[in-house]
Image (cartoon, rainbow, N blue to C red):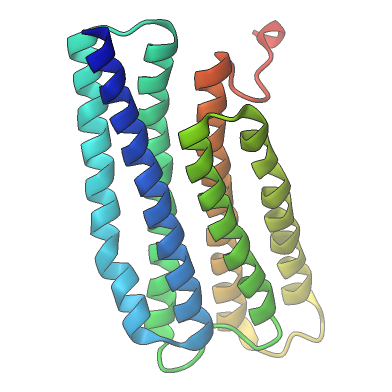
Length: 220
């Protein structure tokens, strides 16, 4: 019975890893549609978002069934709870890629971004995909050090996000309010995507160690 239960836990982890891959592809395509005014690619991201939503539903259904039928304890319980929270973060990552694709569709055939900020979004797109792929690996390996390494890429994302405000607020900004709003919102989408990828990795640290990164029991 316990062996079969652990097989189910591994299947649940595989579903989460698959969601990571789907979120990575979604953001990669969304970024391309944004930078290249590629409407068909934006439409594909928008259509495929339902697949990520469905994947979350399947993960949660399996997780709740494991809670109800097996009454897990210790590491097994942490695994199931982490899966529920991670699935939520992964769906949000898909939603954030969806927002990027919708921005590209809304402004088509015009580009969403001024040329001077496009390179920043190219880099943020690469970082976002890297974070999602790293989170995917961590789900498979539960490597605590690898999970914590996501903070480095996320810090790079945060640095670019902060720099965008400097560009927008500069007196030489000549692209108007609408472009400033688009740039601000899109930067936020990428920044939050990175945060959710880190959250997924942190859940795997919780599974392995019993503690969430940054948690200090002395503060309670």
